[in-house]
Image (cartoon, rainbow, N blue to C red; front, side, top):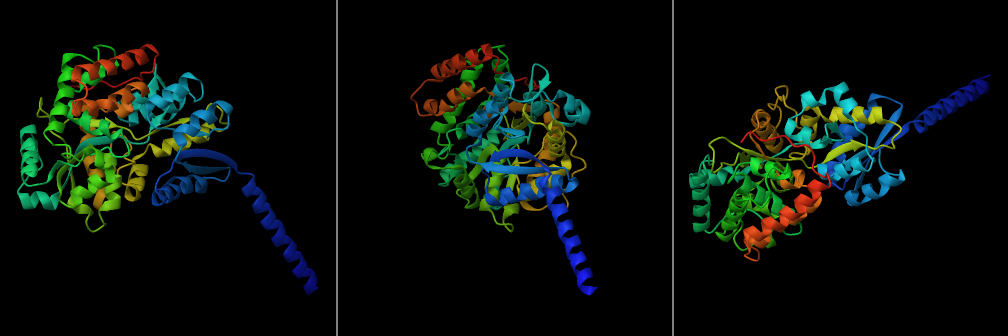
Length: 442
């Protein structure tokens, strides 16, 4: 009898395990390709996003795949129906191509269902639309500004600059003291030229200059734009952009210069906070400060805005509703906070209302950038922003714009450079590759 009972219990256990196994196997897979982030960041997004979704239900399984070649892989896979369900893109211009080819869904119905337009900052939301239809969502809003070492500023008696005259005085003093004025460099990644040039141009001339060129209101090679380009060359030639070492410095090294007190400031988008996470220890993180960059033409603070990436839904997915549910969770203040704690600087979700984000229990870089965004978001919502080329320029135009260092080095004149960019931009405007763009107020 005991043997019979033991056998029955064993059979029940086997059947139970088999049932659980079958149920697990029956989960439908939702795929999400992403770029090859650092291992600790891969682990963090798996913990925050993938585990959240997979534990929230038992019908689907979200699987993230990290690929260094994601921008090459996706346009190859989507037309064959072998791509991911959730589509990654390194900016709106990539998604515009997928949308015009019918490879991603119009997700305007989900925008209405979840209230995304009302929830997100127009500067980012509008950039993901084409002819009034939404095709993707931004993962974050990056804000440009000045990063500095608080300890160095205290030692030098410097205050975060609120006017361009104050900023230039700090840069001149830094050079006189044998330091770099600004930590800047494009070693290994030419698109870094966008970061530094757009910050200078957008704080020299009206932010509407880029907008007017993109909308075809003015040609890119107009006198105002040429003035901004010439100012960027003037800064380079004065040695403000890391003196003679611009070509020899990459992004992490630039942040290291701030830590080592060898550069006065770092003029860059908030994306650089993720590099600071690898440079400053937890105990040192509070030394890394941020302040908006002043302008030549206004006393109001203007934020150079961009997005690291954006996400759409494949036209071939059998699970669009679930993909939308995942994206909706990623568009919340809760997700912003959870991701920023472990990956500061990359997941500053462009939510208009951040009043619910309590930073009192946050520390270091995560607290610094979240507090900065809480200050910036209402100003950006009022139109006090400028357009960053890597996000808002179509592909060929941005590639041409990245050659601005040829102007800095005296190889090409500002006029000739502007004419080259204008040629590419005019062609891409004609090809319909410009996304909808929110208009700056200045």
